[in-house]
Length: 186
Image (tube, rainbow, N blue to C red; front, side, top):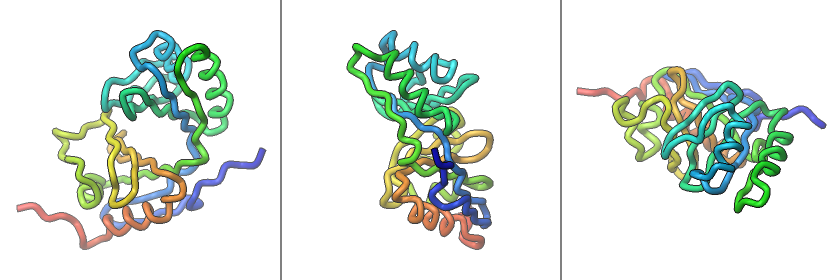
């Protein structure tokens, strides 16, 4: 098996916020009845934690589950572990109307550090005020013309989009983080 390659080779940009290609990350789409016992067992197997609530992230000792829709989660794990974990999850959900699929190589992962709220505010209709969007929350929305999921974690923003959007997303985020373009408030 070849080594995983991130879409932008670890590119980074320094402005009033730092934007960087965060490298390969294991990502598994998990679809099914989020309230079902089989799904709870699958998420516990994957992350060591619980199924997240609507619009939330739930982190366990082995990974994170992100709520994406009423019947979809994204499981974050080590990139190398994703294929085997997806197969184990599919086995746990056998007999259920469910799907577990490794999408690691179809996605790009970005991390925005520093004043990420101002960067995001320029690009999406999501309310980025700290009272409206806190750590532990996940949003799926548009970032300019690209679909993305994003969530704050440890003082930074994580953003996932389709890999084919990576150059566009990096350019958007970098331009929005350009020094001198900070948002001034009265």
